[in-house]
Image 1 (cartoon, rainbow, N blue to C red):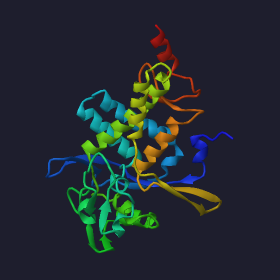
Image 2 (spheres, one colour):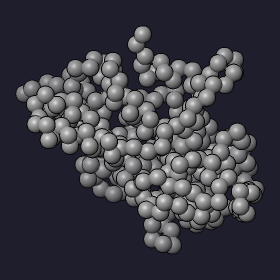
Image 3 (cartoon, rainbow, N blue to C red):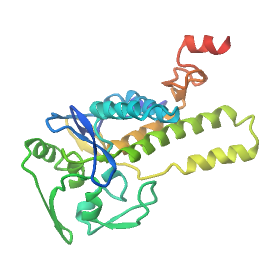
Image 4 (cartoon, rainbow, N blue to C red):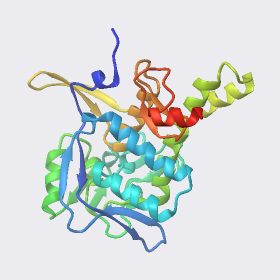
Length: 293
């Protein structure tokens, strides 16, 4: 039986939150952060409803970084991406577990942003609240988080079965650094490019080059999502991503390894697209004709 990415997530629920508007702000430490705008309206959606578009939109932002587009244009693209899909949820994606609130310390596997192997939980959370720290107190494994914002309360109630840090990453004062976001979007494109080079060149390249491709792919690791079955109107597979970042990373890997309709980069314009056939190399007839001239 052939299973596609769309089939795999046909009965899946993995909801995430977003706001209607985001903006860039410079923190006192000089770093630029993306945050929800003051009066933006929140909403909840299921990113698995259109996994192909989600991944392609993320790669198109990353491609702008590879092509060294002006910073103003890149910031606008990232802001627009957030308005469509929400923040990436880096805070819950980096540690070994999303249940960071339940621990006195946060344990961090190797990552491109923080060299610390462990951090005090409150200090770690503070990295993502550059302007107003959350009303959050902790003593040992016990913690209390307070908010009077009706939208934040609504998010907390919606995701009450999820790790508390997930709801905190949907708070209005939660922000993600511009340079960290750029790194993630660019890394996803690097993975797609390396995968395609390997597929296209493995029969022609020397063993050392092939080994380099494999080493590059091996460096693309990180936390994996967990899953469970919930008995709703029918048995439903629920993926516990706890962040949009893990969602995109997981979907990207699935699409790059899909034997039927793989994710490809157009050989003419480098636009990411889903290939209807595994041998398709161009996103459109125009690109194929332009490249053959």
